[in-house]
Image (tube, rainbow, N blue to C red; front, top):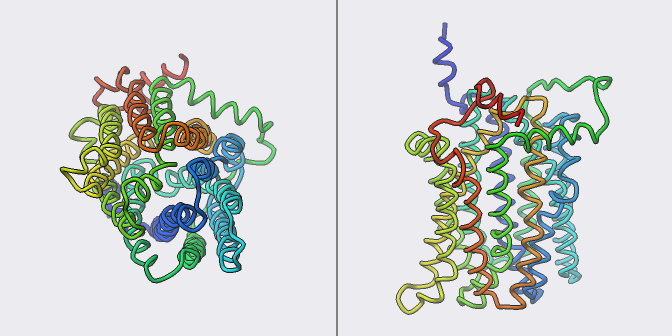
Length: 430
């Protein structure tokens, strides 16, 4: 008979249902990364997008987290999460399919790209909330760190491979053809998710309360947890300034630095290798630095590494700008993944299973709700003060975003509290 210890240590690679989720997620992530590369390039090169239009496109990609993020959590807690994931994949495939058809018929436009991004954004809200809420029930709380690390590794591999493949393909095929590939990956993702055989227990219909009450419970849980409150503040401020810079990064690389599309794809690919390393090293970093201390440490490192982006032009006479962008992206991707694995795993362990959907939606509403604001701010700032100056604003803002977790008990704690710890129980009453 297998001992409980051996069972706990058995890799999730042997867990059938997790494998289906893992493979489906891999196809979806690959497609998402291709889209993240090709849509901005298509907008800049084929549709001659301005900084303001790129800001609007960036805002549209995350707008749904601000508009429907809160009720989505309560809805997901009432739904079968596997079905939600599948439907979200199919909706994203249809939305991008419309872009492909429009491009093929010569009717593509910036407003169409923005509309498609809004639809994809709405589907992604449901997918992400259901995804994060599904993992603990699928694999068990003892395996959530391993599960999150594997899924982050998958995302990082996609971030490495997809931009390199996309950049190379853009030399021989059109952007719409590359977007069509994304449609296929979402369909394959839905197919694999449909193979999961995990029975979900839904709350009884008669036990449901008004939607407003259930939404308030999710928000209250986040606000009443002091450590979680600080992590959410750090993440939301960081995302605000990250989106500000992200709205202009493609314009910066193509028009200011002077890279071509293939070189930009290679830069993104090499940069994303840092995320792959971060996913592999996340557990070790948590053990080495401390699972609490690694959160403020990685938050500080994020701002420092991002500041290398605007330095690419300053150092152009000494170091090739593409190399500086790679170093910046590599370091940034590494610390983003380390930070995310640590804080997402903490949230999942701390929250009661019946509240996971609403808690994740509340967190997403707060931390991703700043992103469309950041995108619009980036579009305005890029027009007002220039692209390079806006990237400096983003770097400084991202550095100061670490203050909520740096000036907190996370700086001195070794281990993060769990639901049954006295500290965690007391924090719910504060």
